[in-house]
Image (cartoon, rainbow, N blue to C red; front, side, top):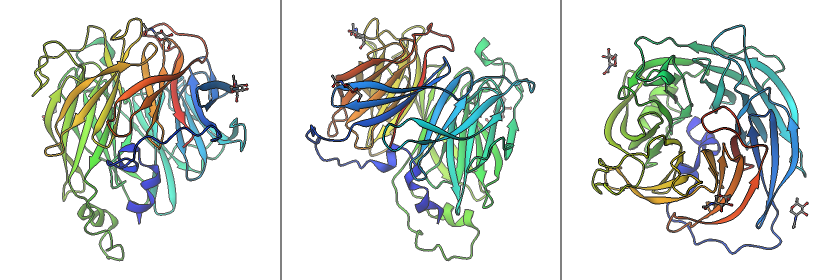
Length: 430
Ligand SMILES: *[C@@H]1O[C@H](CO)[C@@H](O)[C@H](O)[C@H]1NC(C)=O
Ligand SMILES: *[C@@H]1O[C@H](CO)[C@@H](O)[C@H](O)[C@H]1NC(C)=O
Ligand SMILES: *[C@@H]1O[C@H](CO)[C@@H](O)[C@H](O)[C@H]1NC(C)=O
């Protein structure tokens, strides 16, 4: 059933246990790790990491004019790249390209490509029975679209959802709806898309045919500019053996869910929000806001609420991940380690799921737009956009702390802070 088959696709909170074994001893003869990075210069790079030697092994002009985001389906061994070119104007477009990585070198062999609504950024793969789909958030395109997988050459989208503002936003960046990401709930039955322009969490239920059905969106505080988020679940699954039940797939999975929470970072408001999640009989998700904090350490910080802390002026949270009970939020342009920016570590309280800030560590570059933790959980690859550097830092698997710099590599030319230039994303081949 979907609950088990979706597991390989879920992100770190589920695949890494909360009770890790200590850091493995580095093995001199271990195979190099491979990474891929996208750059707004139109290149996708294959990187190789062997101990402290991080190097570029392939540079490929591909994924349209603005390669923006990579999603790796490790199960079928296919990489998907979204191209952020284009806007909501239907005479423009972006693209989606599927690749199979080469066995040895890791260069990407193009399998198929198709044009999409403009402004494609983050994407997520979802599965219904034996069928797979990919959903894409279109930032400039003010839309969410889906494609059936495997991606066919020039295939049309499966579904498109186009959005319009119903009221003006708080800041010029909120001139139109800007879905910034798409992510799955722990049952694999819902997709949430934070819309930075409209201050909404757009929610879709995934039907048994793979079609998305809109649920009522959830408001976030005016001017927050929601960007990225993730779910946490206690993993209790009382009904997982009832897959032969004659109930519709949806209701069955609703019943199978234990305690579930959602965590969100807001780019414009510089905040992080905590929600209790419940699965409503209506077939939609209920999100109840439980805490809002600033994911940044500060001199005026109230340790109970973090309410006095503020992001430094001009700083914005970007990516969020959860491993065990530690959150990591990358913060762009805080200049916490001048001229470099910061990664902030936060702790999740096991009792009530609330969050407090632990501290910050160095991103070893400017504008850490994305970062990715390897599956073992001992290395973090930080994609610094403006400096166009990929920095590998150690992560302590027991304390969760981010530590020493392992390697830093220039990948393509630096970009101007605040522009769509520079390194756009980095992922591990895992
Ligand atoms: C680093 O790795 C690259 C690619 O694997 C290799 O060509 C290069 O020789 C290595 N450099 C060192 C100093 O080991
Ligand atoms: C969300 O915001 C809109 C516009 O401000 C308002 O009309 C609506 O009632 C809000 N919905 C909820 C559930 O608060
Ligand atoms: C900023 O990061 C670069 C790249 O890793 C590094 O060379 C430099 O020393 C860092 N600067 C500071 C002040 O840490």
